[in-house]
Length: 220
Image 1 (cartoon, rainbow, N blue to C red):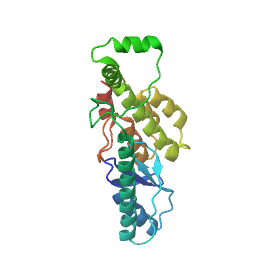
Image 2: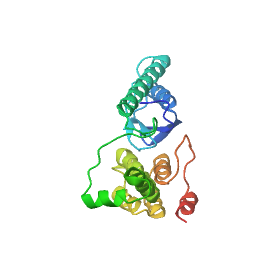
Image 3: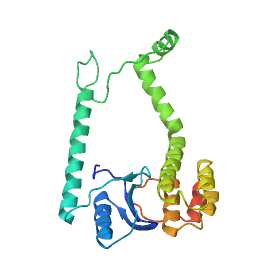
Image 4: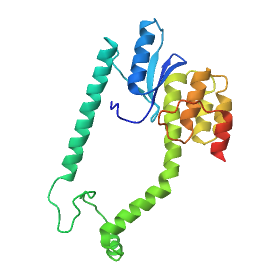
């Protein structure tokens, strides 16, 4: 778990939200809740994915923070080494030193013929095709990811609440106002956080709950 990750986290004691912020902040809030006799279940959710994460909250506050910091550094080091191993190796003549990674691509002969006929050759044409596909798919992918993170959260914390199945069907149909209506009777913190995750937006530490008006604006 990398604490330098800009994603926010949200913790729940049962159906009550107890913290939203960095992983450190959530870990300490969970630790305090457990020491205060919370009956739980107590869960920490990654707001980027809607999935719960495991954090060791044993020991002092300093010990908890130290473990998270050490884990973050280890993950950062591992990621850096993986990047270095990917970028090393012999470069062909004229290959830029930075930003280009050689990989094998298998295509049919007619594909290679078409690529070779494009301005700049096969490599330039492939990069342009990938970038265009990314732009075209970007919005659809963001909507899909928002639906999935909201679903993961709802499944973990509200799977036994009334209307869950129908609400998830409305969610994946991108009917957010209907989803909001179907979960209106749920505990407020659960309902508001589920809708916050369902809205397509960057979750960079924001902690404001999404209202029905916000959802309506996002759909127009």
